Length: 98
Image 1 (cartoon, rainbow, N blue to C red):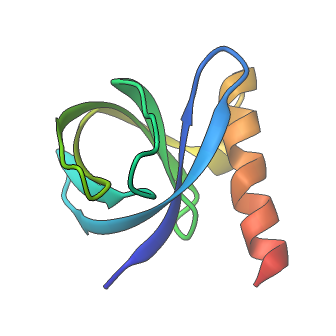
Image 2: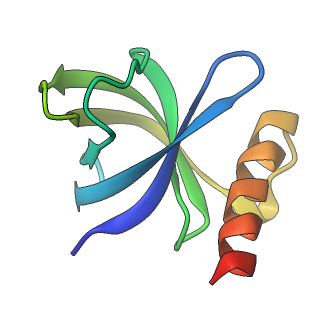
């Protein structure tokens, strides 16, 4: 099953659409458009579950597939920190678009 997600990074939290292919408590395999520049440190936003994972890229492939290792997770519905509230807005926009 493929799940829609977002990769967010940078001081202003730039966001890229991604597809979450496999996921476990420790990490995930995601796919972005081939050739897309993605930094090593980022957030993965699971739009359906409304949570975010602080992660780092542990492997990359030319076809846009990447492996992420999670550092910690956040429930976005209870988010207080400004960057997490911004990530929650991605989920809200996704809910409205359904």
